[in-house]
Length: 420
Image 1 (cartoon, rainbow, N blue to C red):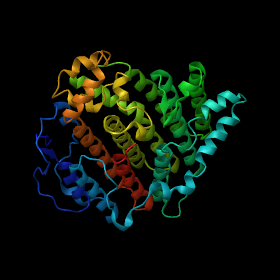
Image 2 (image 1 turned 45 degrees about the horizontal axis):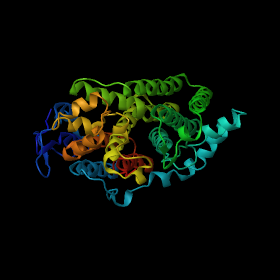
Image 3 (image 1 turned 180 degrees about the vertical axis):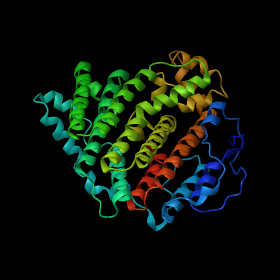
Image 4 (image 1 turned 90 degrees about the horizontal axis):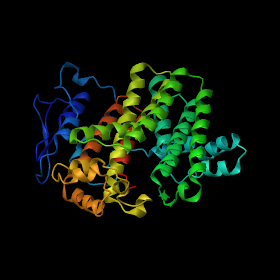
């Protein structure tokens, strides 16, 4: 595997990508030159670098259209950048995923609120349960689920395919599970703000809030049962299992640097990426797609979810409280060591005892925040997020060429370049 050096980042993933779309690549390690050399990245970061075998006879076997191939190549080249920015120019083929799915997404929050209201006669329970379904969220999870559903339907059945009602139900279920997890997080973390407004934790009794989160999960489970698919039930049930395990992992820590980073990545998958990965796999299963396509959908969602959370952890250090809708350095204040902190540990080992005591001593949060900004932790986090974003884009490009497939590629860039 090509390694990271102080001033260069491995680019063999780009070789594979270009090779897949019919471009000849010399059989040697290729490097992308970065601007100023800095400290050597920690070993665990090097191990996360995507390992890609040297191109062989299968190099030209990609099935994606030229527009998608170009989009992915442009995203690959964006690995050189470590700053946030606007969506790159994909030419005349660019699509806005939200506009593309405007009809499919229209009314999705109203439908969720109606589903919850139908299943309770307790007015206060309904008020708490529907509090975050006000249309102010990003709706990323239902958008990605519907986008994948339409892309896979097109891949399997061609241009006359339509979105199945069951696939839209999965999109609703994914948002319901996500919102239930936010409610439970608010109770556990005693958060005061969420999406720029007072959290449920502030407005209602903790016990009632916890039960409202349970209620949303219960209604989502009923909706899963109505899909009448054992495979989909198993896939979506795994999400709830992962969420609980991820929350438990977040309450603990590891002593060694390598154990800590592996712990962090597993926790990130379970708390964030599992929901996206299993939701898009569920819609692929409902389309009747083959096993390989369902696995492709899962891996797309996994990489997109990891990229999303890495960017979220980055924004906690660089975005304003107003933009994020919650205080900056929120994770540090909760005692959490995310990717920027773990990367910064290599240059500043004095962070290690702070991590072990969960930043509880006076001045720990401020000092850790300062050291992260003085290190290359933010740059390394950005690169790892882009690595997962690039892999998601590469997977999307393997589906049949369609506006929805292009939308999946563009979504990876929207995730990478978001500012809140």
